[in-house]
Length: 507
Image (cartoon, rainbow, N blue to C red; front, top):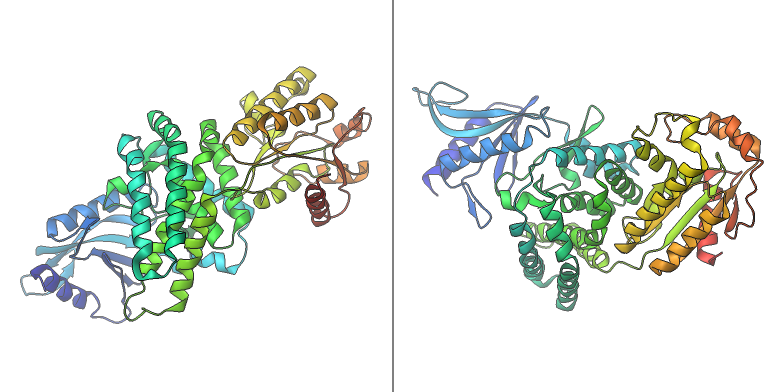
């Protein structure tokens, strides 16, 4: 045992000397939970990816952890404190004696409120999923752009490192590992130019780096990101979508497909449009993240857990997800039309999670695009002058342009608009042919009373339609629709099932 290790054992014994203190050990740190306080001490260890072998290194790591994490989670992270040896030989936290160790001083939170635990209770609410996306987007907005070259050039080695790690213990067939590696390298070659360009645009940043669900916690009903990588800036210097991909992948792994789709769509809605042009990298990014988590699980298969079936099942589920994500199916275009109050937006959002590739289709809504083009928030009301035929045409052109960008990346899109005019519907049929993807056109219908009742119940929505507008729409000359006509007067579940049936039948 080294001198530092012996000193730490003495410190750890002192920190746990009084009742009620709980100690949690990881490979690199020991955390001491005492009432509302948590102290995190870096362990005197050295690994290929981190070095905490000297007191100065551990102090620097504590300071870096505060610097990186406090902006994300000021409720949790406070300061670095010295652990001192007093003249009488006793050990104190933040004492006056000689510093013999350092710790990150934190507020304790309810561990049952981390998202990995909450995911076991059932599907996340839509507002929680949106808030998760907002928190991640906010962290990326303040993250510092850095040199892209090291990140992009590191990806082949990351793929190979995953393969080597997955071979440990021979838990997975070698052929499956090789297939995953080959597909990952092939995908990287396809997206490398794209990733270089994103780096030039400042989208490679010093990010959180480890955004799986266990590192996001609810505090006061709001998601808080914590435990960002501090020990190696290179590991956290990544494309912002690679950072996001960890959360998306882990939501899928925890059987939260609806939440994963909402997180993706909300993130795209509140970040620059150029992220639409990088969706082609998402399968690689999510697959890499899943393979990493599979390795982390395998690393826990050591005595006394060498034959733990639960750990092996976890590793296998991440490995299988990595393999599924890297080979996404072909995209498709779905158009949802109908007069105001027929439930288009509710339907589009309900359909999206199940539309491959994972984590589901990008939903593009005409009402939201109109607000963006007008420079106002989604919930701000626009005057009647914003609804002229000329402006409507511009909105549908923008809708088509964004759908084209999504489809060009091999991702599916659902477009949501009234589509009351035949040339609007024809334009999206032409777009599908241009992009060589199947089009499923769905036109929802419901009686006026139903539509007006739904409009009257809206709160905080991007649509400006009123009950009076709904009445005026009854006189629209819609013409020959040419899409599947769906009775939307029943429950949301009935409408959703009818639309799924129509898509499956190709109507």
